[in-house]
Image 1 (cartoon, one colour):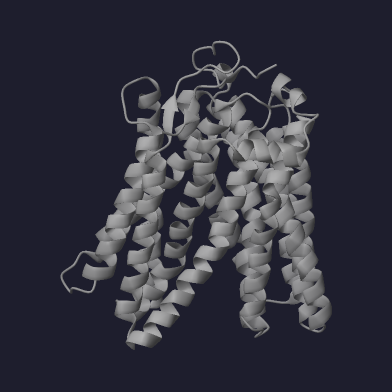
Image 2 (tube, helix red, strand yellow):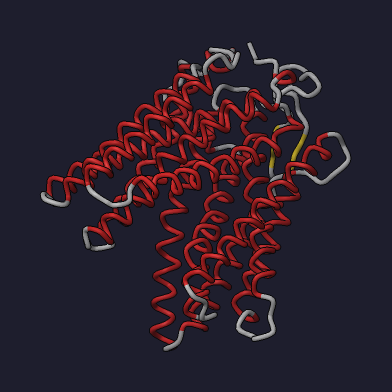
Length: 447
């Protein structure tokens, strides 16, 4: 039995967004705060926290398997709660491991490997199940807005946690680090569980029960034969490679090429994030108009955002060094294009997840989540490595960053080309869907 998606209003969407905020709060402690403690307070090689963060992304390669588990069980809220529980355990263990490194580096490092593995598994289980749940219960005309709510609330989780934790961590001691991290984790877990309690979503659906007899290997092979699913997986990987690389390069570019201070480069990054939020809001407002037949589609926003991001990266790499060039406006507009593309892609992901009522939406979401995680790990590393190589060859940073920005632009254009080949074809999967319901809207096919 499907949830009555038409009655799934904004209050319940915000409650699901709270889960994303809680997830982000725990992750930012592990990938940012503990990262800094290892590198600065303990003066450990930067490769150590870098490897641990890469490990938490690498473990998310198991997202398809976790998504299949959610499909066969049908109890998505339990998978979300369970994933948050595993993530919480990983977050606390990561703090204990970091504190232990001060006196016993090998033992602390071994414990950190376990902790970051749990963090990756928890993020994979909770995050994948959350997206599957949203694809099933959020009405079609609210998917763009729901994706915006999810993204903004995740950013809010990052910001609130970082700002609050920094106050309680001063002056720094290993004991204080453990107490603050454990407090953040406990609050986040309670908020997430409270948010999904009593949402009124179905325990199981008919397509989910039908998938119970399929093995993971057979289900994955079947999903991978779908042209739209396969191409969307490639789109996610390519676009997120470009997006993640850009995030890591902006502030070093501002300092080395534009000669901005730390405060100036941080402000420039803030301008970019503000532009991203505006782009997300634009998709939420205009996307709802499309679903009522009066505006552009999520697919159109995705393509436009990718093309605009590519153009602005070329401009940033080739024109920003001119003294009269409006750098801040360029970066803000780039953020707007990024936000438009990112949130439209998430909305499209939910649309694709709802397109086939065959009980394998969790597997598809897991496949796309794994592509995103691997792209984030590979994108940041390859971009910074390429900057170092080109800078050594050219002997100056301007050409190095321009080269990498142009390579990122090529990735965004490739992503736009892939997205353009995902053509919607209306085809009810299990009878005619009610107007506004989250039942299958279309079967997405490629030419």
